[in-house]
Image (tube, rainbow, N blue to C red):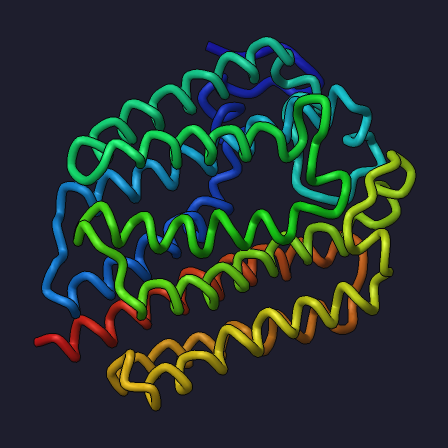
Length: 302
């Protein structure tokens, strides 16, 4: 089956573009951090761990679909957009189609969340509903908080403390001090993804009336926010090791600096479309940081 539009593509390929697959590996990073910690602490549980990973992916996909359709309806996405293709704005899918896809994805996430609640605590249902609400209202609803400079702190909250502590809790039925502390660095790195996105979109966001932190305080401030997120993320690991909350093998996470350094060079010097490379690069920082951290803890626990 093909879809008629500005370009003729198979419907499966259009939906593949809509979910933005390049954003998905970073969505797993918080859960990977939690799984490394549960393994080291001897409380790893495969079923809840896999379900938490699936929920993280579904929430990211649902959020991507919500942003696609709601930014189009608010007039934020135009032909002047410098980011990756948005299927609603490009006419590849109708808004009703994207909204239906979004609802189905969030429904699947909530079904899995019921399993996580059954495996741990029914309070997790509340957490799940709040996560879905946050994903929708980033660009949708009467108060799209992403347009008012609240995107950065809420991205940190949900990808950091909520995701790491939640993924640890559904396996261990408690939350360790290390899990709380390690929710900070990965939350900051994923927030840095949003910072790059907002830095790139300053001209179009201004035109659309979006008041992100990058629009409010300017590109220099946004670049400082970006490097600040990365510096704190990397600095916390040796501090936690010296505090005996993590084993020395956690320093393996610093191997991701080989990705972070060239990405920062792009953010520091460039603007416009080329920042899409830094957007993808920052996602790779999050994934490599979390994977290397988890590998370090697994090795330390052997």
